[in-house]
Length: 492
Image 1: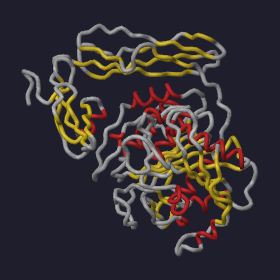
Image 2: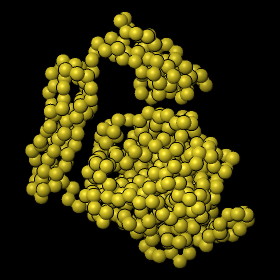
Image 3: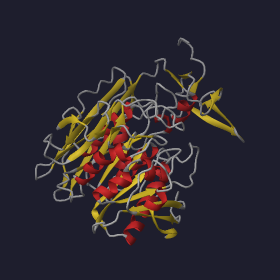
Image 4: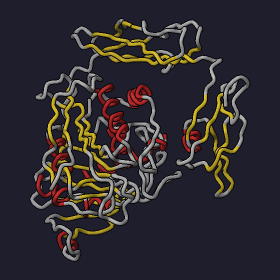
């Protein structure tokens, strides 16, 4: 349920009071979404901008702010209100309003499990907010889009996975792959971060998806970003291609300079990946990678190369720039080319039996747990397995590939990772206390505002639990627990 907080107000009249801010012709309304009964739901404010002379039914673009931002930053600085006027779409800007867990102010909680699934938390709230908008405005169900910056970009990715049956396409600026941890974000420059293995991201996405629709994704990434580093954008691209495309990022359909741009494009390249490598086919992923400046004009920014580029109609606000590839225009062009279409022949669905990754020790016999395949028309299908690369005499990560083909010739392949470890090997990991905590090598001991990280094995203090700048070495003991001293026979 939504309660309108503010009646219709002319955005133009409000903005006339602010010198240097562009004036737009539409109207903005602000509402409150009231928390529902499902886990993680909260009251949330959101704004809806409607251009004058809006067509019907209209496309809807929901855009999520980043950490330390609000929906007002999106409306005032990102150039999207002008884009809504220019292209004729309804702009919806939710404000996180309140939140749970340890996080920076106003961050969307993309790394919390209860905010990563359909029917729960923030992605479900966003879905319900969009449905509330549809009750008041005639929205084209084939043109519902979602985008965001930073934690908002990461949450847009989550929403694209949890609700791919609802959204037509998604765009992520400085966002992160589905299911990532808080350690995927850097707090220093140059940036450092740790990421899930690609196979884990792909597996998590497949586990969550309940609709065959291959939702197109635009990945926007500053190669110099110190907060969300370039590898995040590469992983986001590759995971989406592995789930919805050919899984071959090197086989792009086209690569061109980014246009339009304002003043300069920072060497931006716009690359397109389609299902078959044909530039005329529908995109699975499109990427914008550019080398933008670290410093920004706004004094409230962190100067870590982490921002939205609003183009000529944008402003140099908090974590936003004007100069560079015009993201409002480029993103809308991507959305306009990708209305929701009925999913084509999905092909077989392969289900892996047993764990993925499959853990083994050196010398242990490998027995493939196998996989099953089903098809809506053909029922159960045979599965072909290729595990020839697995070598149990040597530690390493290996891959099994499973394939199935239906009667229409649609072939689907999935992979399982096989991790072979040497129980006698000396294993050590040097990382920050925060990384040790989030990867399970350490636990948090809390007393009021006192938060310390303790090694999971010997429970010795290794530092402040959320310290992301220092490095501590932990060692694996005979019982596979993590301790602060190496076991006998291993070097220190």
